[in-house]
Image (cartoon, rainbow, N blue to C red; front, side):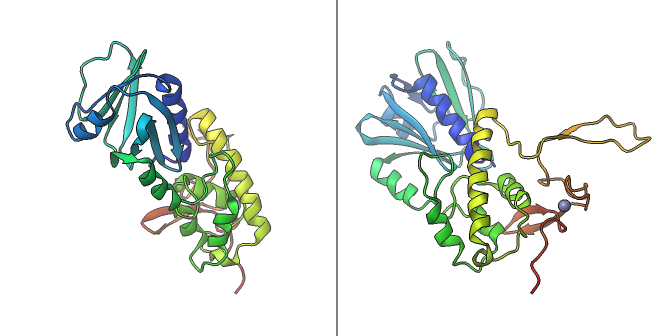
Length: 269
Ligand SMILES: [Zn+2]
């Protein structure tokens, strides 16, 4: 699933291509026909993201809310736009470019008040201007729930997904099963600062890079040396880049968790 950096990157891109311009909005597939008709021919005032949500704000308080979910994607191109291919839920056409949305979990028109109600339920987003990490700490440090589950809870922090979660815990030597209330305050502060840096870097690059390195090739192996961008995410069984212990995986709240049992040990009882 796309994490927050992807949505913020999309918002910036849409702002650059369509912001302040009159746009034509349609739903070639038909599922968003009524919503598209409500904003078609209006000026897109601003595109912005909050966590994993994308908002296209139009004049007169109308907002198109998009949540990509697991399968949603935007594609784009220069005008003239070709005939839509496949299930295009929304097509937006601006002065120079068009973009097509397919496969999203949500694509709907909301009022500004409905958007506020939605964002009020989200935790601070490290990529927004002046996020309030204290709100996240208030939730974390009172909870018996594991830190790994809390980090994925969008009402605690908005925008983190499975990759940032695994990498952040690894970088700060935190046992994923540690209850939120046992996380030391200084560790949390370092994690938040690091998360802001990592996610901003993700927006710039368009990909998550938390632990770049060349992979070594075992002697005698014919495989070519590769490069890795993350430390533990989806690297089950491979040596931890810090200590060499095989990376472990387990399922937690229906998502796979990855960690190094040596670098992120459970605290003594
Ligand atoms: Zn390790």
